[in-house]
Length: 378
Image 1: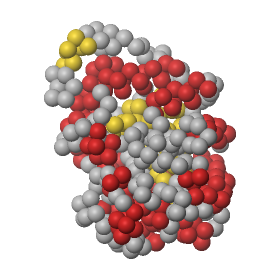
Image 2 (image 1 turned 90 degrees about the vertical axis):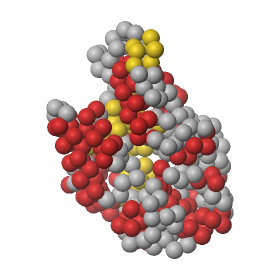
Image 3 (image 1 turned 30 degrees about the vertical axis):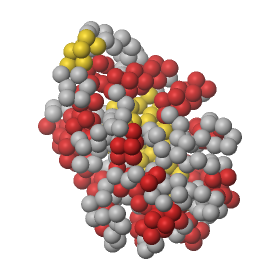
Image 4 (image 1 turned 30 degrees about the horizontal axis):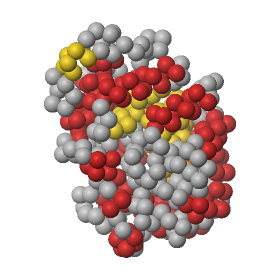
């Protein structure tokens, strides 16, 4: 199984790229296969509780919503580490607030700069990155489908003028001349969950790359739907890489990890899990039985009192079930279950710093690196 690292791109007291560059170097030293940066205008955590009162990491990252732009970040890393072999991708780019022609240009540029190492991770995005900025959020899937079709039309145009009717992104004598690298365009990995998005993945994607999915059995079911859609479209289902983005909370001992999972920032992060995942784990999401988690959350609107009320009764069993949690050995056992349910490219993001202790958060890097090396041997 291949392994990737997801790094949260936040500005720090030491500058915008200090931690990001260190994370890239660390991933390269662990010989991972891919490196991913999310595409967010602001964080998926409420600023009201990511403060020194609850979170040790604010000594380094004082403003949780100071998110770096992903394509600029990846371009910097590509230029600074020219001999790297890792795939570089977005996990994932939003099709709502970014015109797909701009996305097509950005990823094609990175693909040329990196000699064919770029991957376009793409999805509908989240409400928090669209609605507050004036982007209509009423039909995100329809917008996604048209954005993907626009990107493919431009990439496949061969430099000829493109005219295409679209409710969202009509093209009128559009031109796209950036060439592919050695005849290959960047692969497209789609973050999809619902039936319509899974069908689109099977028809058009080079990889299935869901996030905020925490049940291996549900993953296997979704993968089967993707492969069925690929077969129905006359594609080889085996050409679609089964990938997933999972969050890791780790530490030296199980008890230490449980302490982290019981903390305010970690429990707050659990609000990003969809209500269906809460129900599967025997709990009820405080924001409603139909709440979509990260896709519906607008975290900057939640004050401290509201957050503390929402997370007051979260059981430890739920916290253990919405990611890979525990010692390095525990996490590797859990990763093996995902492998057995079809995952072949596991992207992990270390969120162990979401806790009161800065020291323990920093110390989690040791077991996290053991996890990276262990996944490669699964």
